[in-house]
Amino acid sequence: QVQLVESGGGLVKPGGSLRLSCAASGFTFSDYYMSWIRQAPGKGLEWVSYISSSGSTIYYADSVKGRFTISRDNAKNSLYLQMNSLRAEDTAVYYCARVDTAMDPYFDYWGQGTLVTVSS
Amino acid sequence: SYVLTQPPSVSVAPGKTARITCGGNNIGSKSVHWYQQKPGQAPVLVIYYDSDRPSGIPERFSGSNSGNTATLTISRVEAGDEADYYCQVWDSSSDHPGVFGTGTKVTVL
Image (spheres, each protein chain N blue to C red):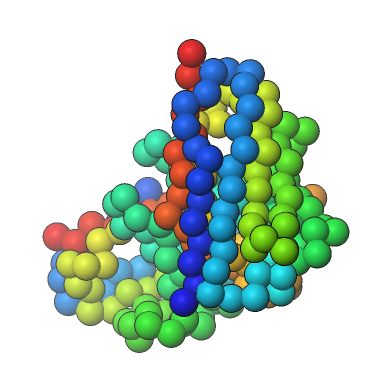
């Protein structure tokens, strides 16, 4: 069965960095596009970033562009999110999600999320 | 950027029908997907491509999309349907294409 397991969350000071990982299993990871989606405490879902199966196509939300970097290692079945220059407003649960289809994508499987708290 | 607007809350009695709207400019020209999120849990896909249901999702969940409004309909509502619901589209004309709606809390009375 499809499994996505995020890790790497924690408490970090404003301006600091954190790297999230998502370990995928139960499907051919290299065949699928992937995304990061976040949810601030008590708030709605916010799409963060998207990467194609080969890594050649990448998109970011305006709120994280220039600070976050999405990447993947298909040999390790892993997705990453490098987060730099973190702000208080980046505090959220970060989910990795599998993207079904490259056209009009939707997110068919989600991990349980990892909490990132940005606070001094 | 593209904006999706949902009512903050919908209340419905058990056994009745809940309708959750998702408004967007000419949303009928896009594919709309819907997610259910229960407290403390990750979202779950309940409708994709406007009206298709993933395996395991009850037939009570259905969707439609036309004009400026997409609708998720939950028939014969059960207590277990109480959750937050989000619509989502992919705005391919944008360089930040992922868009979620504002979310709707469904309360079963």
